[in-house]
Image (cartoon, rainbow, N blue to C red; front, side, top):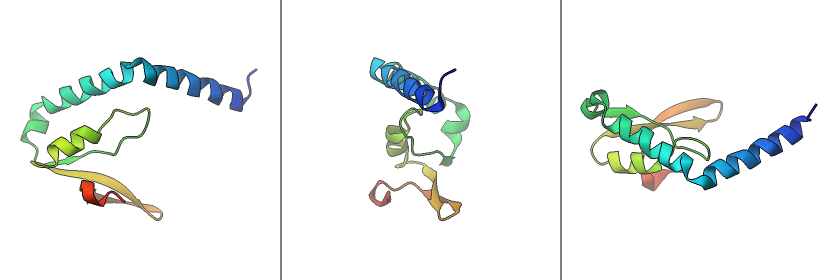
Length: 93
């Protein structure tokens, strides 16, 4: 049986390969496009999203693009809790 460390290393290699293949980027674009064309999103004035990290649907361009016309809200860790904050690229710290 494989050790936890070995399994994690193997999964990291698979993730790296997946990320480098361009499939993840294509899937992110497809998902964001579907979201943007949905009537609920189109009619929304306020949208809760997240700041993506590696391996997640890429939301960076999405947040940037829509923050001009919608209130884009993102969660922020504050100690032991989460706060909801308006996305502002100038204040991402």
